[in-house]
Image (tube, rainbow, N blue to C red; front, side):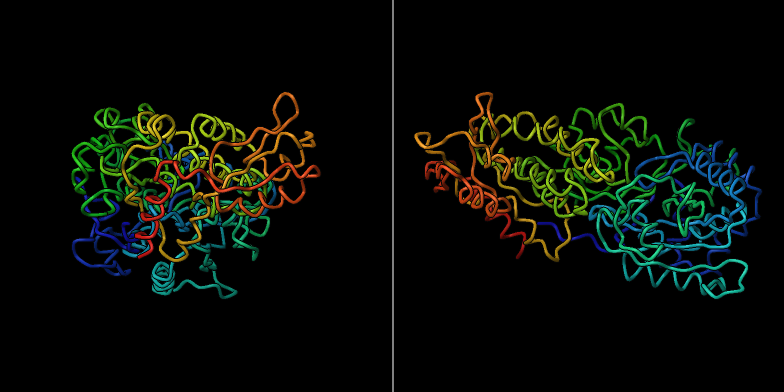
Length: 524
């Protein structure tokens, strides 16, 4: 298995640097070096700042891609209407194992991010700035940067600034989870949809954007829309930060102008010449195949046109020697473990989907594939946050992108390749992600005793559904480890004593043991 990405991997640039200016001179730009490299920055009115953001088509770089100018105007409007000073939040929470671009910016050029955030704060009349971070290195860098500017959380200052630490989890970087953490609660989505522009930190209108977004704003403010537009595509000007990992010789963060062929970026990182697939946008993103890769350029529109996604800027190729279904299962298990546990689609649906993919991988046949499609579809659009939707998108993309491998597992019992674990996952606690591997046991029904009570389907719906006749229909696959307890409870609760657990047939394909060997090597 690939080692987890370091906090600050190698940084490369295609063309002239903008966000990464000065990286060739020092490891970290303190305030004095920052001003030497980038120069001073003049304040702007709110209207001018919004017009600037709109003229350079600045969108959020955290994944959702919401237009920054529109968000800025919404916060200003709410603030004026309510007579409340707004709050500005830098979302530097980066809990996805495949993403490091914001961590690189916060560690190496924190003042560029602060420039953009302070520009927005001054334009809006904000008196509070909050920086949310996930790692020790980013927290230390940001605290040093605030101190260099004389900013703190002491009363009586023109602008109070503070750092809030959030857990390194997928759901903790979601906007509502960050606001909840800033307000003193757990860094989890609150389960209700509220617009931060209306009511965010302490109930005030809140401008919350990703760290790279503020850095891009600072670059655009210095260059102006005309010079900023000279780089990249006309409809998506400027540069993009990408985290490239997976099956590459050199994991890296790369700054690249929009419009550069994606295959060139992968070549720069030492990816296979013909990758089996490329995961774009991170673990809430989409897979594209080699054909789509040939046509794709680095831009939101181009990636969407070939079925990919820019998302959080993570790009992960896999080579032809690994099993793509097994690689996707590792990520599905991690996504299931990242649930906030606050709603059914996330708490129950994601583990069920990961278990379903495990069934498909390990010989469950067409019935397992159909069950996986059903549970994935059921998760969509029903969660308290975007984590279930993003995870379902990843799973659906896996099923669409690797049809040949899927057919090999469904019809022939396997593709013949082990899972090498090339997609990065955090090493601490990885053993907890084994929960969807098969237990080697199956549910079985004694039809001479079954009376169709249906209690078993209520207890473990991931494995048992009621058919049209009201009698149970069992998944033709091994019981996943994470459902073993509920399967045993279903057996105990059966009024007719018709349900039992038995060992799976020995003649099943030997992929489960290969899967366990891959997981075992991943822990070593």
